[in-house]
Picture (cartoon, rainbow, N blue to C red):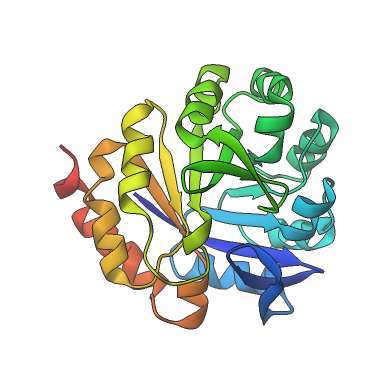
Amino acid sequence: MLIIPAIDLKEGKCVRLEQGLMDKATVYSDDPATTAKHWQDQGAELLHVVDLNGAFAGVPKNLDAIKAIRAAIKIPIEVGGGIRDIATISSLVAIGIDRIILGTAAIENPAFVQEACVKFPGRIIVGIDAKEGLVAIKGWAEVTKVKAVALAKQMQEYGVIAVIYTDIKRDGMLSGPNIEATKTLADALHIPVIASGGVHTMKDIENLLMVRYAGVSGVITGKAIYSGSLDLKEAITFIKMNDNRCVR
């Protein structure tokens, strides 16, 4: 199971939000590239990057910062936020982005997701952000009537390689991930599920590792590693020592 550090970009800076609210942003760094290098040096094997401005605008808004991050590190990068057409995916792949995260498009234009999976095989992930089990879109500003599990199954059929599942109520709140909902989603799919939202301490990592067998292949962490309540290097070491013991 991978421990995946997150870099959320707002106006070129590395920030964290509470429950996806743009007016509740804490700035952690003015230099996202240096931050990315730090997480790589701590042992990260994959970096999660979200263009927050892009998520709200519907088009990428932090490309310069994303390019700087790509130039600073060697590990794979996945990027999401405002990716709504093939041209945008092509431009991100061209600058060396390894995996593309689609969110709002999965609801508003599922045919686009299907096309993206065909044109960029092995690169497309869908981020499913949910509140009370219902999918939220447009930077979490709008909650739909679509159930997370139903959407995940549809995206699996289209050929996405993984699903990132975020419980909005827990994101940035350091209240612990929604283990039960994450496991339920993983049980319903045969592609990997990556947990996101609410990670606070090593105990949360231990709890997620216990549902590794269901198909939870990774966990994204942001505020916890920035605030210091979770040590990324320690968490990665723990996973490497215990991962095999938790696979049924």
